[in-house]
Image (cartoon, rainbow, N blue to C red; front, side, top):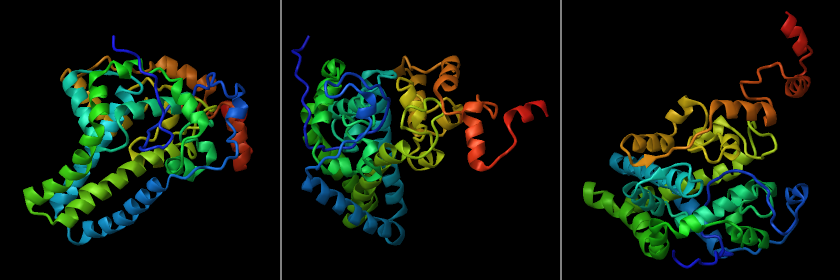
Length: 363
């Protein structure tokens, strides 16, 4: 058993997170959930290095979009999409579902592949990503949440990365159990060598391959598969932190801020966020098979399970889903139909509908 290291939280955020569940536990800061849920006013300490970096990425990406349609070879555009997909799977299937939520198990070859793809995505090493994401899940939308949606859309999207972490976030991160990550040799190898591996995998290789394999220009190779691809990738993740915590329905638990939103799914291919926060241990994106079949991360995990690289996939039973939706949902789940007065009468009143549920039942 390796010596236990005291988890440390860097007050300067250096990467991007994904998303998950809400359990407001003893933070030692304020035990009143209603108070924790209200973002307290504060003056943020800006991290100008991150701000300048994000400004460069987004301005340069506008030029990258121009090059996509004017001078880039089709192979370069396809390659950029494939690299984006690998990074998304490395983060979604790797640092998110495997290492943060342990919703399935993976053998060493798959763990190594996911680690490489996750490194290519440059959103912090697995250890820090999982630590911060577990903090987000445990204290979601409170002052201890790294990207607290109660502070507004911009803060939860990217503003939280432009300022130092609050004392509540740092304290919350120290209370997360990380023993499984310390005992994982793949995670510890990446953590040790991250700053050597990341520049090569994220910036050098995606630039060099198009130049040497299909004679792309250095400018196009750097601006499209590297800069534009990376900027799109982080904004996809940010959109789940922001839009999926603001817009949509809460069919499984109306006490949670995260929402199910098809529009968010269309952008991020991860939009069933109320489901995810209600059942964070489920490896699937949703209970609906069709949407899972259209979600690359879930398709990849299922493929790996068929060849024996992924196993012990966890999922919620239909009965548990039904009971939870009926007990805590907001009434938008199909199980409720239009006959639940707690939700539908209020909705009908808002829409100006005068016919009540009892009239429909007896008609």
